[in-house]
Amino acid sequence: MLSAFNQHFSQIPDKRQQSKVDHKLHDILLTLVVGVICGADGWEAIEEVAHNKIALLKKYGSFKNGIPVHDTIARVISSLEPEVIQHCFINWMKSAQTGTQGEVIALDGKTVRGSYDKKSKKSAIHMVSAFAANNGVVLGQIKTAEKSNEITAIPVLLDLLDIKESIVTIDAMGCQKTIAKKILSKEADYVIAVKGNQGNLHQSIKDFFSICQSEKFKNVAHDHYEEIDSGHGRIEVRRYWITDVLTSINDLTSQWDGLISVGMAESERHIDGKISKEIRYFICSINPDAKIFGNAVRKHWSIENQLHWVLDVSFNEDLSRVRRENAAENMSVIRHLVLNLLKLEKSCKKGLKAKRFKAALDIDYAEKVLQLIY
Image 1 (cartoon, rainbow, N blue to C red):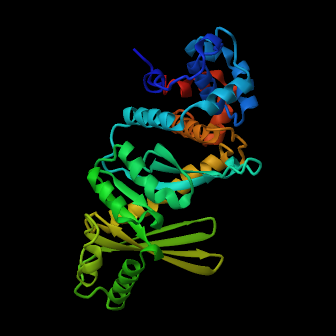
Image 2: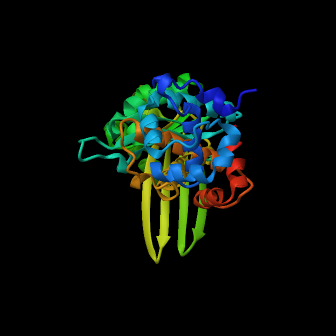
Image 3: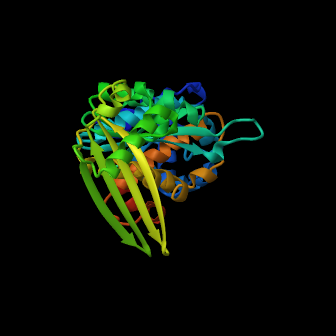
């Protein structure tokens, strides 16, 4: 029986002249994955880890000509087509996940700052990711030329994913009718932030909730939920309102497929005696249940804390100088793959940075992580 890695990643085409190949593509990819699991962030470090973990590598690969040097690893990985690797990753996650029913899937973009190359005038790559907030894993990703292109990239990414019966959350950049329609076509629901990019809609929802609050929602059916978090001298009160009474803004909301409710989220923070407030507005295809709405809004920000922040702190992504050809984009996918493996490995209760360090020191633990895809 094929391993999950061989089953889903063996379709990556190797365009090298096979008569001149000293190291199988599988072995190079395996070297890369094990290197990143064990804390390596650059080509030379990946080669060094491979020499240290040669016994582990030979259990899962051939390596008949030994460990590939870092220049070979860099050249081969840089030449691979990113779209193919992304599809392999997504297909692996589809097979690894039991389903998305009830899942909150946050879509958001991150610029890999270290991929900017001033010398060659190469812009930094911007990756849009789909993050399953409940399980804390990446479902898929796609590169855009720049942040504004998230609008066109998100529907393409959604087409690749299985998001049935989930709630998809997107910030205001993705507040587009085509995106809402695409989510519904995938048999999912949406909770999408509305800001100034949808001027009339945003102002109408803002005015609607302002009037409702001033009149204490008199004769307006709605649901309300409140929660309080505290710790380290900080208190945060989060309040959520949602309603399907859209009479006063129906002309605008009727233009959006599946829109049946609008919501307002208020965050009130108390820090060192100072109080700050933030209010955000949303269009939703979910029924007016404030607890479900609040959960979706709150979990959207998990993509910042559990993915983007982790990639920078635990994987040093913004400091990475991997830039050659397709290398930055391909390495981004490998980081996502390793992040998922480390999240799925439950025996070690430490953070991802500590797990990578443990894998570097303990070959048995490194193999335990690797076995999740083999």
